Length: 261
Image 1 (cartoon, one colour):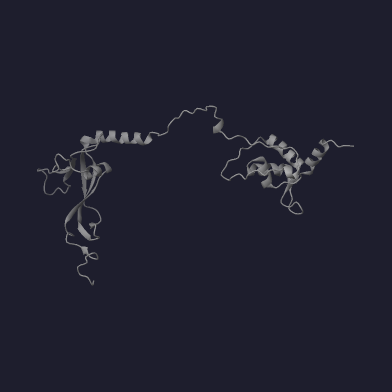
Image 2: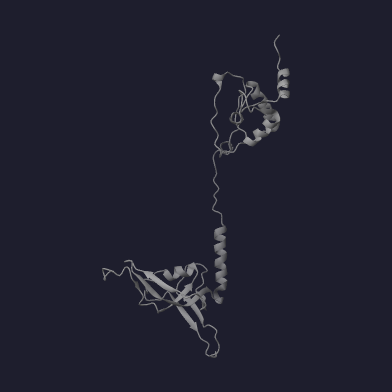
């Protein structure tokens, strides 16, 4: 590089051979290790690691030594203070890297041992209480019950659509606002819906599917089922794309309508 004093493009490997431990710990232990020291005794350690050695163990015994960690202070509750550290050397070779606030990269060391932490046998009961408290906390529902002044419930349910089927001229027709696709329509009784359909076809002989949905405020599939039984679809001609009553229903309606002599 042109500027030899600029070390941002280099990797500091001065500590690459330093032995480092990789420890996998629960979140509550990580919080305790990251907590600041007490103001009354800042030199007090936040935790200590105890190595247990059996003096009677033979040199041929390849079992791993026993490590335990004792926390100096923990959060309130049933949080264990003593943890077993299961050591393992069977892992992929790894190194630890760091980046300073100035952007300098360094190798902090090579991982020699890997530890998995678990509560010590003497604290297993407290750890069980902690797990139950945590489970109960997340199972507790945060719903609230609120008393309302208007207890008749009228404002909590949608009002049914009001339709007028009085015969009127073209100038008296009012277009109903289009209903959003995300609003659910309530299906009426089949017999009641057929009576409404007959009255609509008395008003005018031809209707499109969209017009009937706007007039009746019924689900599209329900309207298609009724139209299939009562009406025929015009594929061509002046009324192409619309429905009209089947001949048998038109004759019934014409016979029921009184004629003036």
